Length: 141
Image (tube, rainbow, N blue to C red; front, side, top):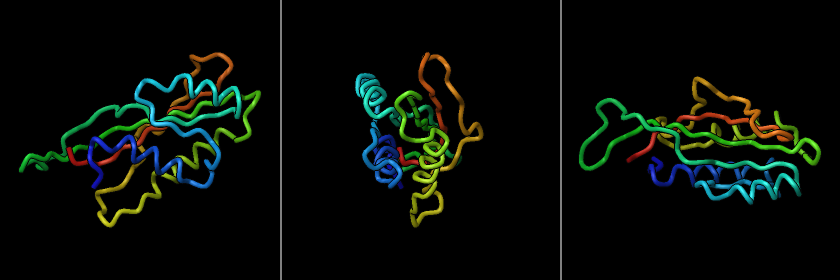
């Protein structure tokens, strides 16, 4: 099972390793990657970032021995400059979903799941297309 402290890194690595994102900007963003995202939008036209873990809910009865099992919410940011983009934004969304839901662990509780609210469009950045995809993942805390 993925540890809480490794969740953001784990998700970023899975997305970056997906063949669709070869040569693309895929970042683990702890609030310090705005320049890299903007540079990717200027140069290659798109970027993917995994920001900080959104939330965590204790899994019922899964505590003890210094460990708690949490169901954590995770977002993936897809941002595109439509004037420079070489990838289709919807194909990017499908590839992110495939990368995370394709994670194959021997433990059936150790999988990524799409959140009930699977995605939203964010229109706060003029000139960019931005989507946030939402996933849930059980982790050891």
